[in-house]
Image (tube, rainbow, N blue to C red; front, top):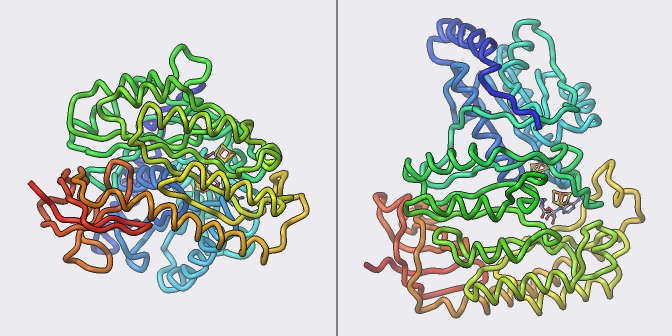
Length: 465
Ligand code: SAH
Ligand code: SF4
Ligand code: F3S
């Protein structure tokens, strides 16, 4: 796999620094950049690089698009709703551009890795200056410079040669929680999923690069580090080490921190990985293992390459080695061809496994994927199934959370909750949300919380010493 270094972009960064310095004189202040993110953790990680590159080019980050001289919208294409949300926000920027014609609007990420969406932007959003997909992330300075120097709109076609770009500056949104991408792309082509088309072929970062990044984060006091990849189990395929080896290496790093990872594909999750987790010092006893469906025939149609028996076997092994493990999953409801019986199979497996947390989605046809060509299920049926699934999971999660009452657990304190500034929120090892009273000095630190109340979605308690 080709590796490219961000330093190759240095010539453009220099030019842009000149540009932003001149702009600063005209404006009377440093030009500002606003980055907006849709989608998954991988996209959040990418946005931290966009922000890092923007600062490197001489922009200051801002929280209000109305103040910005450069806006980067990092989009998601996983479901129709995600695309519509991004397009609607981009639509709202029209009036910003009208007020400030020098504003540069870039739309990047998964949505614009699709040609039909680039065409939409080209024709229906004439005030968008620049689009580039995920594989061109490291080319942000070069593409922005092209836009400025040639003063014309740039629609970057998808890369066909996928590289691993190292050395991009990262402006992290937290100073105690961090994302670390360990691989990019996906080769699995689940029949419903757009990701392999918009993120390209699977490629892994070098083990030493990942270890150096995590070591640095721990040294800087980061407490909760999540390794990211669409299927971390195929990390470093073809090399003489695998994901479990990477985890055992990382676990040796000394410090007070928790290591997590996502996502793990059930077809490749290994006993070795579970053994490494069980005997580790830092790896959270938390497993996100997307099931998608409990019906073997639907799993086959989804091209998932595992069946119900294989899935249940991994769950059995996880629980045998880590009885305290928190298990979570993703489910798609209303995949083409899903019969009532198929759906009941999903309900059954939920009752059997009893996930701590479940992320459920109504199937959304994605242009260019095989499942989108199939006959679709009536939206009303999809909706009814979805509601039944949520109701079942609500009861299961409540039953799973109740026994936590009375226990004292370690929680990483995040800060005042959205609805009540007196009440702080944080996450425990299984990644469940916990509410408690705390002080600003405790933010970003581990605290011991005695749980006194639980519902299906959260735990409440008080800090104990
Ligand atoms: N790589 C991860 C999933 C990334 S996408 C994995 O394989 O587990 C996150 C979740 O979005 C998926 O697990 C799936 O449940 C859901 N999803 C993906 N495509 C979808 C679609 N077309 N409609 C509805 N949900 C979808
Ligand atoms: Fe999509 Fe499947 Fe790849 Fe996950 S493994 S990103 S669901 S194609
Ligand atoms: Fe993530 Fe959405 Fe892309 S879920 S990989 S940002 S399509």
